[in-house]
Length: 298
Image 1 (cartoon, helix red, strand yellow):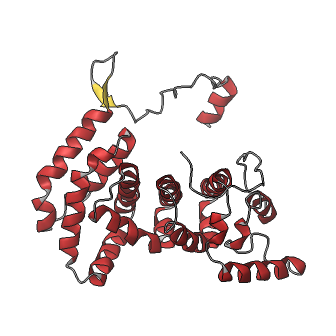
Image 2 (image 1 turned 180 degrees about the vertical axis):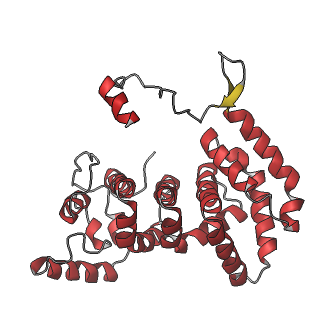
Image 3 (image 1 turned 180 degrees about the horizontal axis):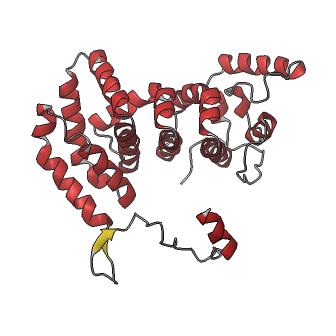
């Protein structure tokens, strides 16, 4: 599956994530993608001025005149590489990267979501989800302009299951890891549409329970279940009215992730690993050496 974007003649070298050593390293990686500079701010050390500053000023002016056009000029491969670069640096240095670049990324993503395929929407939402996963507070605030569309997509019953699954994943992470922000966002949305916040919350939970089957991955089903369970301590009557539906999907998710231990005969969460349990390796991975085990104990 690919985006419906025009291919360009440029080719992209394979991206290999590495630690951030300087702003110039980040700049070289980002410049592998055509026109990526058109929406990012200065990626180098702010002390570096001169010709680079002038070039950046021209790039920003061009970006303002043709906002969003850079995306349509990217091939599917280039755009996918852009997302890989963003995800890698979010994992490597979340706070630094989000503080410097998330605002520009969010503006570009808002424009991009207006004219992109379903698969493209999923890739954009994955970037947002990763940002919230690694930095719940900062990620939620930096991508706040995108989140109302996510909540509206759930309430309106997004017809594409894979997109709905991503909507629920992003919302679940915000609710579970930054609940105060979630309810303030819900209140703001309710005021914008002249609706009671409790009514909007009820519609959200109802659609969430109804479309839970759109989520196929057990880890995502578990995330949604934990997010909904976090609402249960509330004395809100709307949440209490949805109690049965919420419990039903949580029980279903519990069955999805529970497996029987052949040694003890008891059931355990297959997604949890004890401190003494060795991780399972894939066919192309090598087992840890004794030195690796000693480092783990330090």
